[in-house]
Length: 133
Image (cartoon, rainbow, N blue to C red):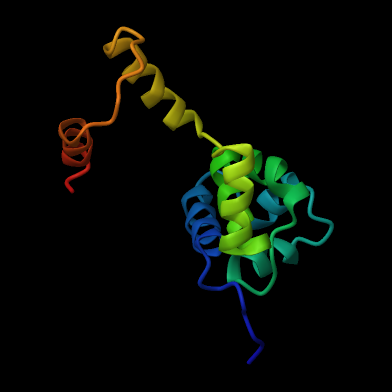
């Protein structure tokens, strides 16, 4: 059995899930072609965890999967350079923020009157309560 060193990465799991969600709209081969993979098998290999996703494929794959490119970039960085290096990149460049997260930030800014509110125990608890934590 061939070794699949990236099978347990969040990226491989996300791509597998997203390809399944896209099935009613387009096939895996269509997604791979839209993403610009020379070989449609490349998407299968990334999804299975046999190989890493090349960073230059992130924007086109995000469009093909109809997902947020910043989220896909975060997952790809973890896989391509490892957690430690990905954390260093994020520390230097800042966390890629998804469109959904930008919506949350905008709502927080509007609700606070653009006052740059500090994270308090109460606000943290309120946010966690929204997500059942």
